[in-house]
Length: 140
Image 1 (cartoon, rainbow, N blue to C red):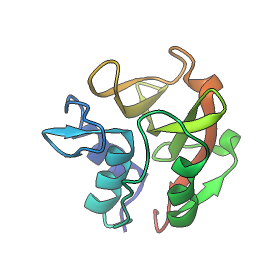
Image 2 (spheres, rainbow, N blue to C red; image 1 turned 180 degrees about the vertical axis):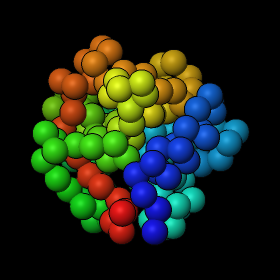
Image 3 (tube, one colour; image 1 turned 60 degrees about the horizontal axis):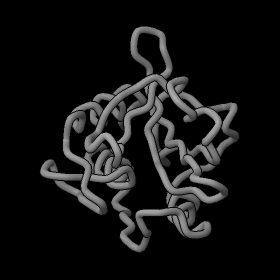
Image 4 (cartoon, rainbow, N blue to C red; image 1 turned 135 degrees about the horizontal axis):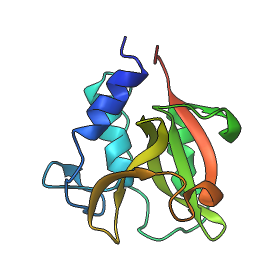
């Protein structure tokens, strides 16, 4: 079974890929796509979801994460966990928690910045925007 380092290494292979809403290839991907493609590549999940809007609209975005991953308290987050962020009251963004040089980071496809990137979770409002934390099932 893959371990947390394997998940982070796979997520980093997506760095620099352009952001495309509901994209699922190296030509373009979105935040949920990064999570889905990393899970698929590591044999942790074959589920993918396409029924979400670009802007937060209720709690539909969180449903597939609850159905196909293990939810845990946000304060128990650790590298390779998936964080969901909110826009206003509703979840609308996913990121994989990682760590670089001892600094907690997130790997995510960012629409405004137009690509997959890794940045400190302390940058901007990411810590305040966290709404849920999930782990891939079967992860060592």
